[in-house]
Image (cartoon, rainbow, N blue to C red; front, side, top):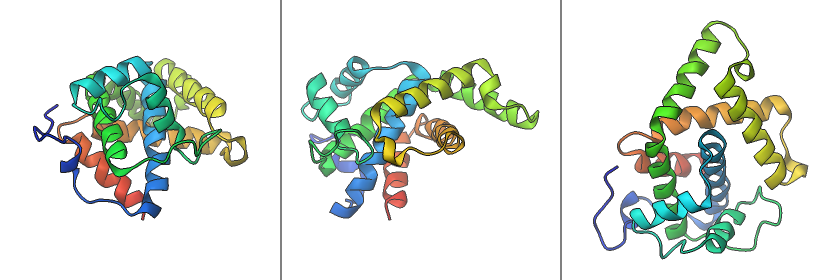
Length: 188
């Protein structure tokens, strides 16, 4: 993935969101990372390594800092411990897109299996890779997110599958820009 070579790699993504938009962006970013974790098994160490590779390690220098950034999501249990600023949001976008590109083959495989299952009218959870992904996503969501706002199982499944398809777009060249623009659009 080609990242900007400016001294501030997060400044070139484009439009700056309003403070009101940041709450929505925080939640959406955390869900994108949750989907990546669920499908690929990446954890905080991989995210921190990617932060170094993309030049945003100052924004997420250790596991505690990364955890605090993710806790900024209004969907999270114990949320509100850290306000997410625009550069931190952009940094998480770079990390998410880079991780998606690293795991593009697995993402592509999962989306292909989803397309095949849909064409055959076969439930996605009956396909091994998709079933594992959906189970992991559900378990992570249940463990980490506020139960008052928990969607019904069908809605959670639909969210997981939508995020899986979105990951395919973010895993391609220019994925960080696509993700940023999608976050801005959805936050309006």
